[in-house]
Image (cartoon, rainbow, N blue to C red; front, side, top):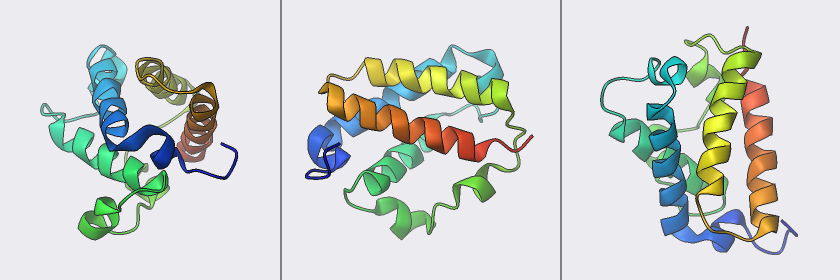
Length: 123
């Protein structure tokens, strides 16, 4: 992004919600990733939505309800190696591709998620 507007301003709340929903539709299709989640994915989808609102410059229901994200600490219970990172990123990339947006916004999302996924590798 050019720094003048946030990802939240570029996408808006509904497209960020769509991104979270579409990500979990992708998770449903990938057994290795799906097995890491409880049967009901809706709570995880809601938490991702809240988190994305927060990190992309929108309102912060995540902070209000869950506190600081502490991504690495919250995800340390699962073994995340390079392969799992790639599986997760593939799901997120497909979710990003499913949401209409400007290329500049898409590039910013891709960069953010690659950095975040790399940060979570713990094995």
